[in-house]
Amino acid sequence: MEQCKIKNLYNLDETIAAELMLQAEYPWELLPKISNYIKELGKKLPKDKYKEVSENVWVAVSAKVAPTACINGPAIIDEEAEIRHCAFIRGNAIVGKGAVVGNSTELKNVILFNKVQVPHYNYVGDSILGYKAHMGAGSITSNVKSDKTLVVVKETNAKLETGLKKFGAMLGDNVEVGCNSVLNPGTVIGRNSNVYPTSMVRGVIPAGSIYKKQGEIAEKYEKSI
Image (cartoon, rainbow, N blue to C red; front, side, top):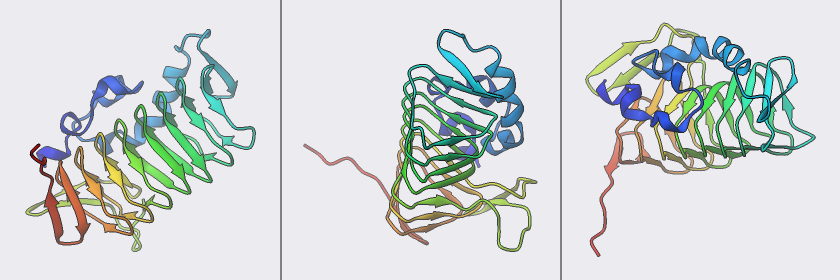
């Protein structure tokens, strides 16, 4: 499970939540801590750069928030982020610098690193998305198993009990998720990997991979010039 560790998924220079990310070995261990961390961090943010627009909701002065967006606290919207028309942030959300939360996208208990894009009809719950991760239109994280049992992270020859009933997906830096894909509970996708559109994904996807379908994962390669 080495590739599931925070140090192998994320560049901590690209999030305002770096201090929180240093408190665990695996990223899902931090999901229950997001709410309190936001409340503590929000009070320390420079008042010339961030405004507390409502209780426990801090929005950077340079961020763009559509008047039709709904942001419930606790939440931090970092500098130059864009919250578009009818976005719904249910709470416990950190939206990184330059990130985009788009039309009808819903967030709940998440950390979006800098430059993350969830721009069209996405649901992201109980998840952490790394630097420049992108979810195509209609792609979602499914955060509760249908039988309501606790989520287990499964790799080829190993598994880890998380103790969590709600756990969506952990996306490493620069992950691309194709349109209308479903990331099942406990999905972990390594850095620089791509997921084909309309995929149903579960388990651990290695870094630098192309996920085509269950059981068919190709390793990326660089074309020679």
